[in-house]
Amino acid sequence: MEELIQLDQELFLYLNNLGSETWDWFWVFITHKFASIPLYAFLLYLLYKNYGLKPTIVTVVLVAGLITCTDQLANVFKDYFERPRPCKEDFIAEGRMLLDYCGSYGYFSAHAASSMALAFYLGNILKHWYKYAFVSLIFWAAIVGYSRIYVGKHYPGDVITGMIIGALFGFVFYKLQQYLVKRFA
Image (cartoon, rainbow, N blue to C red; front, side, top):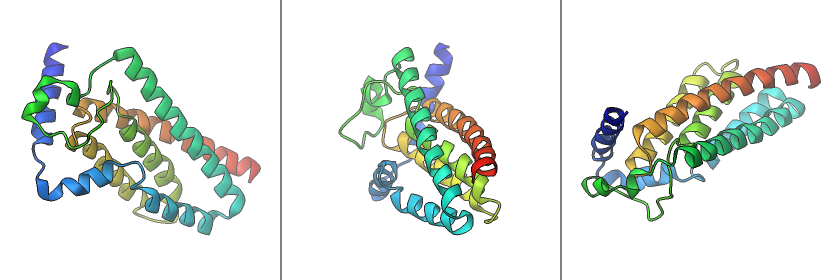
């Protein structure tokens, strides 16, 4: 386990130090939770355009449940494992910390989990009408995940775990959405 932790720290420092001041503003923007609002609004429009009102309402209610599940599960993991974030460790002096607030524990990344959950959920729904929707949303989720490493908030292992858990939840909620839309909308 110590070797795995050491590898995660080394990979964190490598990925975190790839950054440059020229691009810092972009990654700080991407990692902010409100940065994706225009994307969400556009996806809501696409859902309504292709689905109509009732299925869109079902889909949005499930989005709220999906985000709640991934976020709360991340909090449970953080409280259980109590793994300090990289920005709380001494070796952060060798890396880059771009945000003032660090937070206590980091395993696993709720940002990575929620963005990947949404990507899997909405990507699977929208791919029926838009060929590249799934791949585009997965790419977006990966960018959000990397932003957490770039700004110094999470280890790669935190992000990868979050993405895996998010993908699983996204797929389960997609199946639930398909059932509910067929049954009630």
